[in-house]
Amino acid sequence: MAFDSFSAFIVMEGHGPYVWACYAVFSVLLVAMMIWSVRARKAAIESCRRGYEFQVEKSKVASTPTSSASFARVNVSQD
Image (cartoon, rainbow, N blue to C red; front, side):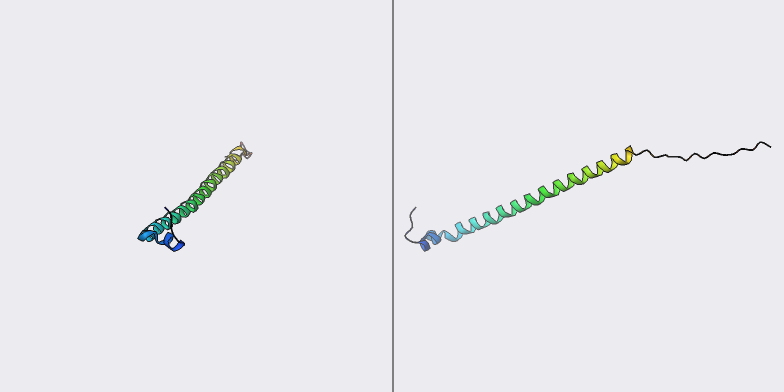
């Protein structure tokens, strides 16, 4: 399809507003999906990192020996 001028290309024999509106909606949605995808990726990575840090902290606490009871010597007198 050949056009005589740039304005004829923009108008596209009366179909220009519909065509350019479709391109604009497509472009906006494409950019929005890219931004949403990057944010979702960052959130997933952050969630995995927090889960990993929680597991590391949990394993450090579990590997540290702690006494659950205290033992003290009691002097028993037998009078």
